[in-house]
Length: 186
Image (cartoon, rainbow, N blue to C red):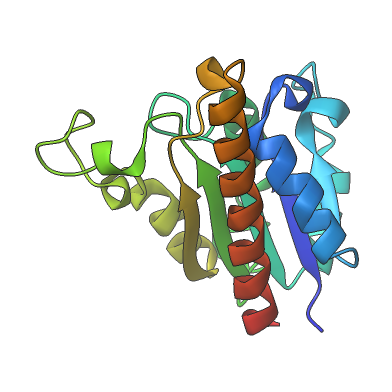
């Protein structure tokens, strides 16, 4: 089986509901994967570049798990990418270390999926927010393997028991879809 690296970019997983549930369920279903929790390792944003690049080198499949914050990944995930995907490592004339590896995004939003469409509250379909990640994959020679996305997982609703149960089910379903996708790739 291919080696899978799952990088959690939530800035405070202890305060998360959906991403925390997704990661816990994914770990149960895919215990052989390597899980990296950026909020626990780098709360000060001081990324250990050598360690993170070594993780990337070992992986065949890279999964970026995060909540959408202002239409993108949280700043901690961006910092990790900025620090580890460096010229000469991931791109450039000698930067071929990620070439051929597979990239999957796994993300959530508080707003429901139906709001991400032309004419919806968010004005654009979710795919319109992903070109930077697709280009990053292309530049680095990563194989873009698309994404698993679940909306309607708002932390604002976690005090409503009915909504909490619905969101828990949806987060668990998200994890199952992710693991199914990854097993199909491995």
